[in-house]
Length: 171
Image (cartoon, rainbow, N blue to C red; front, side, top):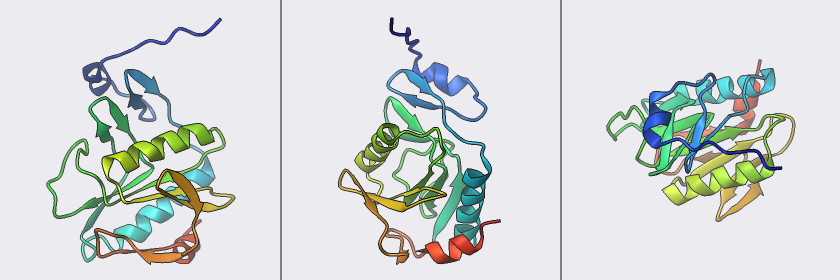
């Protein structure tokens, strides 16, 4: 017998608090897999790397910030890069410059692909998926492709992604 699904409104979701923050997809609350050391270390390294470039790179760096990718879908990327020239929003409604998803053991390929597809539909041009113990990916045109360039400029900003330098920041 299938489990019953409880639907909530956008307003109910936005009035609620979750620890850690949960995502909202078409009426359903979806828990996020977070909290393990490898996940946290990668998130911290990515935030630190981009924070050093924030002002000159014309970005704002935010961990775990709600992004409204459609009227009925709020996702919480592990790290979000925002265009510094846009107004600050409490919940992001403009396409971020880039988002990073760091995989946890509980993540499924189906869920990661769905999230990346929603990010792409919103207009986010740089979507990176980091497996702490394995390959790193870039989501492009509906597909996860192995990250071939270890360093590149982030489109829509004046900042640079450099996997080798970020890996050096892991503690």
